[in-house]
Length: 235
Image 1 (cartoon, rainbow, N blue to C red):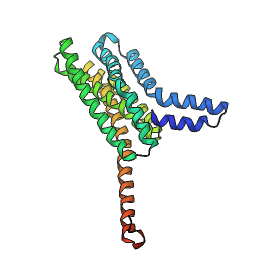
Image 2 (tube, rainbow, N blue to C red):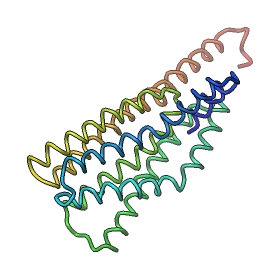
Image 3 (spheres, helix red, strand yellow):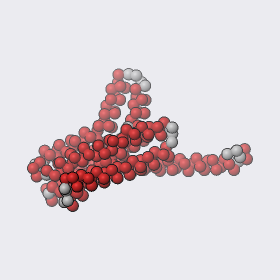
Image 4 (tube, rainbow, N blue to C red):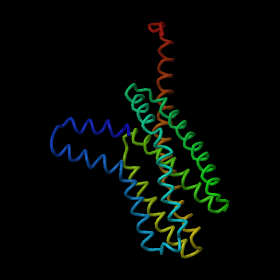
């Protein structure tokens, strides 16, 4: 994650035991925190709901995490490296374009993978196809979002969104299972993923798109005023 790298460099420059220790926990919390919270949520669900009653739900979520990681993981290093280059060169207006192209890749690659996966496994149940496709696509998008939101260097939203989203997934799954059964339990889990994705998207748009547009308008207006001044006719 590009943003974490810049923050860790600042911490490590202090060259002390406590700064090194803090850097370790800082990076682990942001990088692995979402995984830890999601894993704990799934473990608690399995403890509260008998596994034999939700076999599709449990296997679907596990495969969702595996496949979504593979789908974006294949290009995550290239995306992160290019993102770090843009930050270093201060070409901030290109970051949101990179984000949208990465999201497009996540959608297209997820759709292609799902088509092949369903054909190979001969799965034609519409409800199962919808639930699994939804969770896989949303989670793949979330992995993309985490990379870009850390570039903003505001890491609290990542932890907060996963904490609240995991709580929604946990309580939603348990409540809807008691109400309607396994499929609705899976739907309750997906609602938590949707909350995480939506909240991260709000922060990304606010800091990567809107602030970039405001910055461009400000500097464009400033250059326009300078051209009207005879002393700056060269511009």
